[in-house]
Length: 496
Image 1 (cartoon, one colour):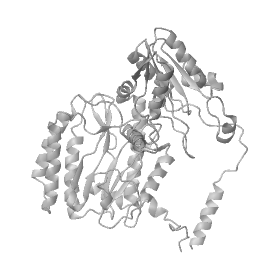
Image 2 (spheres, helix red, strand yellow):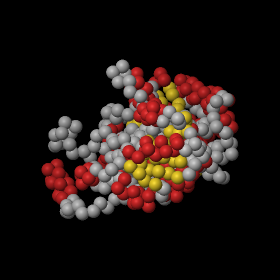
Image 3 (tube, rainbow, N blue to C red):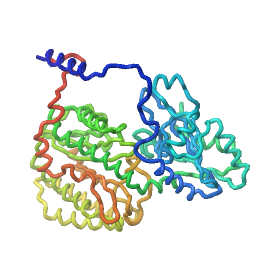
Image 4 (cartoon, rainbow, N blue to C red):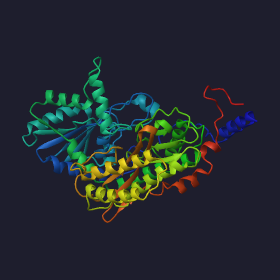
């Protein structure tokens, strides 16, 4: 029977495999289809305003990637240019308010192998696609900066001081990557940004060097309508993947299988990669907030935490849900998780524009306290854990430094920008409070994505089930893992 299935599978692959033809032209866009050139130009205009007429900004693009992986530009370089070519540079002249893109020369052998890539030989094409004022060769950058230095109107260079955000990377992880390398006595290399700053200082000591990151961080804090739309798509895909996990999860499923079905949904619908590694944490793995090994087999009676989202056109999401592995919450799980949902909703329902995070937290904490007083717990330590959760949230609401509800989301999963003050139109963030019962190794956490509009807060992921009855109803449905059971053992042998 299995042999027949395999033969049928191979026959189906044959039927749907296109006939190979000689490649005569590349049918792939050379410039992003997600934003028009005017969107990038508007961002550059804001940088000109911020640095002033006596300065230039120099941004170094991402280097050639390591391994057989698709190139992904750094967030900072893409944000200002939309250009997805390695070893590119961008200079923004605050005096002339013009942008120059520096590209390498054509690598004909690589293009014959991998397809066309913009080079300085395509200067006219690059200008027409991107709207950038001028395109030059990388080796012209030094001479151009020297010319700017000779003109007294330009005396300062702004560049990135913080590690540039790469594939599936927020700044916090970029800093960790650099500090780990610096701590290694057999390595010790500085960040690529620090090396670039050193070169600028050595070659052009007449320029003062200033940090461009605070300027870009504040620009990225407020999202445009097009940015919101892409974040919304990433959020919808993340939610659909978690819903499919709810259908597919059952005792005996390995954590990495859930990762695989989510990736299928993401790539099938246009994602270019992961926003971050999948956090599929069952049972005792859940209390580790960034557990991502994915090797454990799920057991009956456990809860599963799934925290995973895609990278869609350089924009992310960050969504989390809990589910019972066997499809049904136990009595004690219903009590503890049910309380958490009510407390979590107390926060979501009070998020709105024009108020501070502290005010929302104080209102939510009062509602949580009321819920706690009337909630039934079978186990006293579960009540103690819920009480600690509420008390901790109340204390945070009174803290002077409690200026945010969760963390920003945008081009990075942990996005940049300062959230102090009232919530403003264009802010995008998540909330993710966690309830712990340490002595039982229980950890409950959810996470939703919120976009602030002029007159309301949009809970983009609100269609994703969080109520007990809705989760259990969805878990009755057949999932992808049941429709397509594995046919090969982990050893590589065909199952009989």
